[in-house]
Length: 187
Image (cartoon, rainbow, N blue to C red; front, top):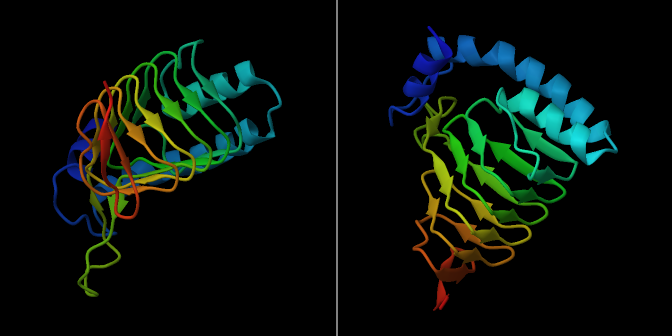
């Protein structure tokens, strides 16, 4: 199984059991990701942190993008990051379901992007259900917010600090709370 096939499997909408062949493709990469995360978080240089993040994602992170350590991800290869993105301290990305961050996005400290969930049924609970997260251009994710699987944050939208977002956020809106609810439109 290739990495592309594993990605398709994780995004099938089905429960992926722990013995699924897709896991045998991602587990060796997880080990390398953990090693590189250690290097990234030990770095005191923004440019070096960006270069290490590029290795984790297996794609070039544009020089206009900044990530402040510490930063964690469990995999990395299913995340894409646009230009002029700012990722503040202490963010955590669980990306087996896929994370897309478009241009000009601001991500506050301690934000969690979680594309992975487990079934409720105890018999299959060790399996994974994954859904992608998309953060559209010019969005701002406030400090300590959590974005859950399958959510799209619309263009120019703002997620208030501490919010837990379980549903799509339309363009040009502000949401907040637990669960996040519409607060106002942005003109």
